[in-house]
Length: 325
Image (cartoon, rainbow, N blue to C red; front, side, top):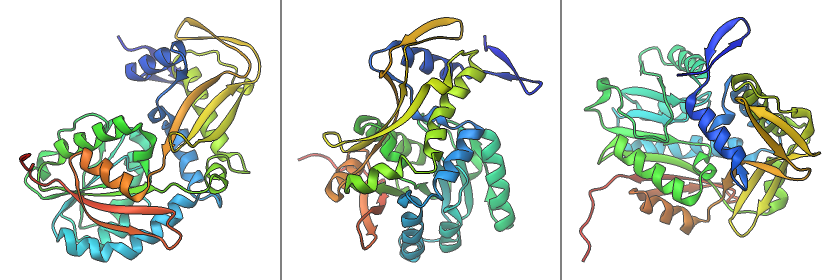
């Protein structure tokens, strides 16, 4: 039975998957909680603020790339595609794509329902003749898309290098899930962040204004609110480090003292200097990215990158499986 919580005078329901991930993540060694739980309403708002920070190069670099490459994308995919955006967030990059390709429908998918409905309404106002079908769901699982677009050719849209938040195995599994959801003949437009100097990477995830720190710490606030937690949030600090062996930025919440707290009635302890690992952001070289796509069942057909090679956008196709020799 779902646990009931009172928030701002309204009865809300704690997500059982959230509870399971948090309890398991705080019990296991090393401690880790999946990054998808960052995105309650406040987390979504903080992430949008992160994308505007001067240190956070991915958003402005990818946005400029999209403006440059979308005419070529339109030629490659043709008109009339249903655009399915995985983890749509505020959909700020989406209008560039929609204006270029003359789609038949737009299906934004996001786990944060309130944020999804607001951004969908914004897109509907900007494109009054476009069918917009918001879909509240966890895109990590196979999806049954709306029947309205069942027979339409499909274009998946996965910007922001969100694929980098998954381990390589999880990323391959997700790409295969996307292929299953979209079907053979679908295409996928996906952004991937490139490997680069840590002096550029680390500040992007540990900004001077502390917005990313607030984003990370908000996960603990959410646990306290939704799972009756007693975590002393002020006794944790945000850490961002470059793990060169795994080609990824890691975000952690580090305890600044020996602590004890409860979550959902269960007791936990953490020692000073120990961490809860909350996010990875893997970076890919050009060859790595193509191998990743092919492993997930997608054949790369085009690639664009900026002059500094900070970021790349790939167009891939779910082609028919070829028999092995």
